[in-house]
Amino acid sequence: MSQRNQLTYLTDQLNAMREAGTHFGLRVLDDQQAPVCHYDGKEVINLASNNYLGLANHPKLIEAAVEATKTYGAGSGAVRTIAGTMKLHMQLEERIAAFKNVEACVVFQSGFAANAGTVSAILGKEDFILSDELNHASIIDGARLSRAKIKVFRHKDVAHCEELLNEVKDEPGRKLIITDGVFSMDGDIGPVDKLADLAEKYGAIMMVDDAHASGVLGRQGRGSIDHFHQHGRVDIQVGTLSKAIGSLGGYVCGSKDLIDFLYHRARPFLFSTSHPPSVPASCLAAFDILESEPDRMERLWNNTKTFKAMLESAGFDIGGNITPASETPILPIIIGDSAKTAEFSRVLFDAGLMATAITFPTVPQGKARIRTIVTSEHKPETLARAAEILTTSAKKLGVL
Ligand SMILES: *Cc1c(COP(=O)(O)O)cnc(C)c1O
Image (cartoon, rainbow, N blue to C red; front, side, top):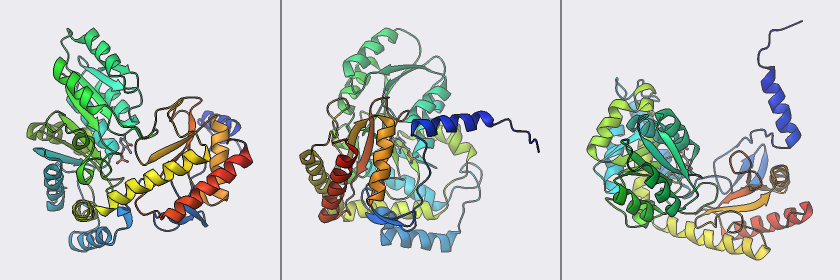
């Protein structure tokens, strides 16, 4: 039987990935996103989630989600601008704006939508974007959608950013400087303060993506702007509700007019249905917990210090040589070769540790790594066991 198939080129590409050892299947979680849980029926220590503060399983978030669902239903039924704005959506935006000490806030369906929707809405083809080379994919996509000219500066290289700004400073277009607050693959912190200085000097718009800094850096998890004491100096702050906050969504904080403009022009806001009521309800509970349970952040940073010391004493390359040095709970173990890294991850899983291989094109060729992320909820003995599994498996594979 000859069936029409115009997609065989995809099969060819998948086969190429298989040959390169970088093809993967999805690991399926059987229970909750917890420090020890089950994937594909196997119990593993989980060092792969972004559930930094354990809030995804916090009883108060679960209860808030259930209550909101019972009261307001399972879905919102429309996009925000048509009929899908509920009181809970507005309450969450007001809550975040107050927490971040800004005039206003808009919540998007995801951090990805927040970045892509915002950058593409506020800039046009006459404008310029100065972007760190390791910025998140959603920033890159937003930049491309805006059709502005993209100038990429070397990672955290403020002098290079200034050089590029100088090249375009006399052009009529607007300039936007954009950086991640915390870089998701290396765990280092962006030079938010120095870039804000540049923005001021050159009259550029300053934007920070705080996805991995939300709930992790700054007072009670207010993010990198708070960490660097840059309140009032960053025009656009993006954060996520999907990582440390434990639920789903992304937000943009800034002036009232920025937010009002995004209400009118940000395409994911206009053309994609708003969150079900359970989402803003659980996020509101999460912000309560950030303020009422500061011990979670304390445990997160203690665990980070403990686990980093364990990896260092085992002799792993955890960044700082061919890659940036981590300053946060994201601790990459640099292996280099993609296939070897993918194999390492599989060996770790079989030995009882869930830690994801991050390979090209997510990170540059030759800089493949196992990314580990500790949370506040990992017990010290669990981390010790994880380090033991890493060491034994690495030796077995000849990568240590
Ligand atoms: C995860 C991430 C996002 C996307 O956030 P989601 O809420 O998961 O869509 C954006 N930027 C950075 C830097 C991230 O790490």
